Image 1 (cartoon, protein in one colour):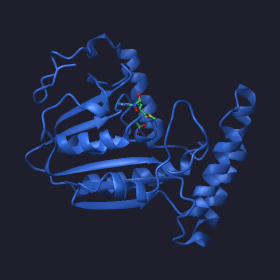
Image 2 (cartoon, helix red, strand yellow):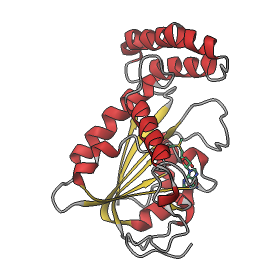
Image 3 (cartoon, protein in one colour):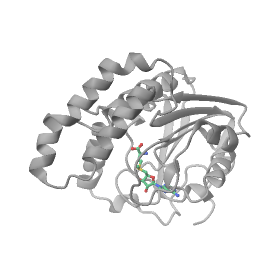
Length: 250
Ligand SMILES: C[S@@+](CC[C@H](N)C(=O)[O-])C[C@H]1O[C@@H](n2cnc3c(N)ncnc32)[C@H](O)[C@@H]1O
């Protein structure tokens, strides 16, 4: 793919118009399900924390002139709603030509000029990237000076599809050292992390529709509720936190 200038992705090999309205609606629905995960969802405990943290970070961004925003891995865009009122442009890239994608591209070689975006969102993508340092360097390159990068990724999750990595706070400190400010927030403490892990381990591979239906009405919400009740006992212990949110400023 050619190096792109600004937002002119007309020459891109991607043709967003060939994605049907139905596929786009499905992606919007999938994003809403992630954003407002129910108690019956195995990701409920981390999702509600991620939503709260990203919303707060989005609110803290400058408004006014209008921000150029890049959503990496953005075929699904659960958090777009928090940025839309401040966005002049919202561009989504992904390796999969599906859903809400604008440009087919690899995070390891972004097809944009340097210093193009004010904000980059990269949620639940880093665990798939072959060369995460190259991805961090690319995101740093295309951010304007003073621009913000928001990354979220699992620190614990069972082996899953074609994922390669689990990222701990020290990994971000290492990979994002070219940024001048770094804030790392756990999506809940160890008690929440352990319950979320139990939920995923017990329920991830249920294929039988009836068994899944039952689990969503019994064991999954029960484990989530236990975490909500027992969570305060874990205080600030984050050694078993399941997912992290990171805000980096160039
Ligand atoms: C788990 S989904 C996350 C979707 C969304 N960002 C979210 O928070 O729900 C991971 C996405 O990253 C995309 N992805 C994986 N590797 C990528 C790469 N090297 N460059 C760009 N996107 C990639 C996948 O195609 C997938 O759409």
